Image (cartoon, rainbow, N blue to C red):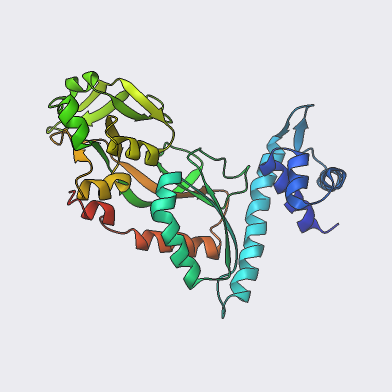
Length: 306
């Protein structure tokens, strides 16, 4: 068995978390995967995994070997692709995880433009607001909207993400316009329920002092586009990213509220594991997104948000 094939099989087991998962990704029998691992461990003279009936955990030797294998195989693949594509187009697959609303509204058109420039790229796109495990699920990269904590991931900033508190004219006429944060508690609030503390909204005053206010969730949803529609229909006050609401605010279907306060700003990032080198196609795609979203986002320019 070719040593590169054994190394690749070992990487697939680590990233899939199981022999069966690796077998599915490789399209071979579980017995073949087990045999390759056994041959690899016999060749190296060490155990790469602590095996139990439920899990396979890397040994210290296995963890070190995994990182070395990733670098080696990425270098080989990159050398081959760089050589074959030196005078040709980018080609190969890109598996990308994207947030649902931002992905459909703003990243989808960007990807279509990228494909027009690089038609040999094969995208595999997962539009979902869940936080995927890049390595175990085999993603090349993900787009996330967050304040990223310290992690094993490398991130490149794409765009600032601002949020707006807004409601429809019909709702405000019926229920009144809140003038202070305390008044929010008396209103019907539409909340994005995937946030950890969705019953608390965060603001900052003119001096930059951070403020928290409790709200009364009238309607909860895991999808921002639905919350936008509910707000336009007059069901309540919503705190939502401006990339979702900017057209409604422009046409007067939603009215920004509590504008004396600001909201903590998030960022949109392209992220990928630091254990992997950026392939030529991943690097080209991330560079394309950084350039496309450089400066003030067009959805905020429309609203004259500073």
